[in-house]
Image 1 (cartoon, chains in turn purple, green):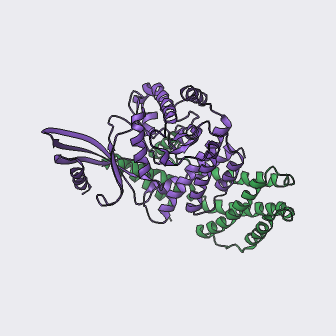
Image 2 (spheres, rainbow over the protein chains, first blue to last red):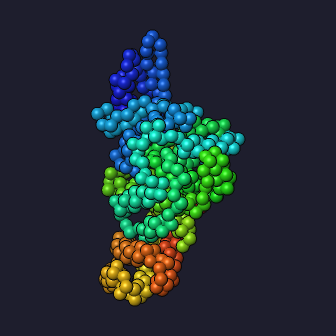
Image 3 (cartoon, helix red, strand yellow):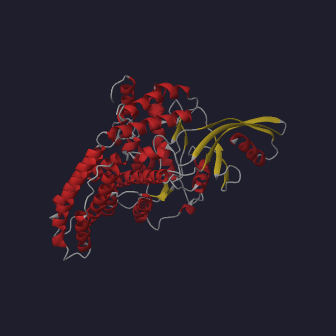
Length: 338
Length: 176
C-alpha cells in the first residue's frame, strides 16, 4: 500500500516523531509530467500532536516531458523566500528506494483551486476575477525581478548573452521534435525555420523564466488571491517575454475568446505587466514567443504521444493531447501569417 | 453492421456518463473519465471521414508536390540542396501507391507524401525573400493553404465551453 510506504518514509524523515500516520491519500488530476498525490499526516513530537497536509510529486512511468525534478525542487525552494508564493518544499528523493520512482514532497495549500474550468467558470470565483488578474501579472513581474544569481539559480545555466535566449529555446524544442515525432511535421519544421528568420529583439535582461506560467498552474483562493505558483520543471534563465507570451497563447485562454488566460484583455495585460516589471512589451517579439510557445506545446504533446505509442504509458491524456496538434498547427500558421 | 462504429462509440460515451461517472468517488478518476470522453469524441469525429480525407489529402499532396517540383527544378543549378530534393520528389511521386483503402495503407502513403512536403516547405522557408525565388511564392501559399485545410479538421482541447456544449448535446440524445 502506498499509504503505508509513505508513512514509513515520513518516519525516517521526521526526526523524533512518533506514531506517524498517513490518511486520505488521493491522486490529484493534472500535473501531467508527474504523478501528484495529496495526503494528510499526523504524528506526536515533543509531547505535542502535530499534523500537516502534504503533496507528493512522483516521476511517472512516462511523461509529457522528460524534466528534471531537481530543477523544480531547487527552484521552488529558492523562490519561496523571495515574495513569490509557492508551497514549502520538504524532501527530494532521487532514487526509487522508497516509492519505486523518484519523488519530492511539499506543503499542501488547502482551500484553493487550480482547474481552469473551476477558476474561470465556477460562479464562486467570479467576484475574485479582478484580484486574480492583478495577482497573475504582479507575481509574474516579481519572478522576473528576482535576483537569480543571489538566489543560487545560476546553476540553471546562464545564457551566454541576452541575444542568445531565443535561439537556445528554438534549438531545445527542435531537439524534442527530432527525438519524439513519429510522423512528418511539416508545420513544426517550417515554423522552426520561420522562427530563425524572425528572432525577437534581444532580451531586455536575463531573468528567471518560469516557462509554464499560465492559468491552470496556480493555486487560486475563492477571493482571487494566488497562493501558490506551480509546475516549475521547465524553469530556466532567459527572456522575460517568453513567459509573457506563453501565458497569452490560445490554449491557455480556455474560454474560446481572446482574453489572456481567460482573465484580461491583451492590451490590459501588457499595460499591467509593463507597469509592474518596468520592462516594455514589444509586440513583434511577443509574436515570436507565441509561435515558439505553440510549437513548444506541440512538441510536448509529441513526447506524450511517443510514450503512449511505445507502450510506456497508458494514460489517455497522452493519447488525447497529441490529437490536438492540428489545432496548434493552425494557430502557428495564423501567427506566422501564412 | 449495426450499431456501426460511430453509434457504438456514442454508446460508450453515454455509458461512461450515465453508469460509470456517477460511481466514481475520486477527483482523479473523474478527471480520467473526462479525458476518455474527449478522446472518444476526437475519434468519433474522424471515424466516418477518415478514409475519404486521406484519399483526398494524398491526391492533393501529389498535385502540390508536382507543382513544387516544377518550381524547384530551375533553381537546382544555383542551389546544391535543391537537386537532391527534386530527386527525392521524383522518387516519392513515382512510388506506386497501394490501391488499398485500409487506413494503415492510406496513412503510410500520406506520411511519405507529407515527409516530402516537409522537406519542400523547409527549403522554401529557407529561400523566402531571396532574389530569384519568386516562383516559389505561389507554391508556398498553396502548401500552407493545404496544411490549413488539414489542420482545421482537428479539434481543440482548450475550448472548454464548446466541449461542454458537445457533451450536453450527447446527453440530450443528439449527435454532437
